[in-house]
Length: 101
Image (cartoon, rainbow, N blue to C red; front, top):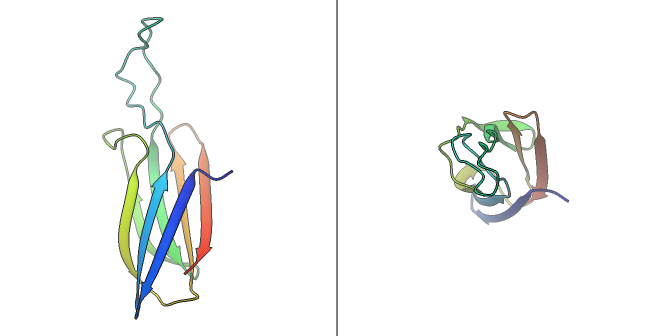
């Protein structure tokens, strides 16, 4: 099951893309209260959005982003276009989701 939930609303030649990414986004600075040990860093480093295979957003995130980040962007496109969101983390995890507008 994908960690990315997406909703796309076409409006003329623009797509309003909303996505929720399920991810813990740990900075590496917090301690586990039960053990006292630091929780290892685990955050999304790279976030990409493509429309019909063309990159429209290429972002670098950091440990400063909150848990389960929410993305809301407007990108060029029209009804029927394919939107793909992908991410990769500092722990070599990754995921992607594709949806038609």
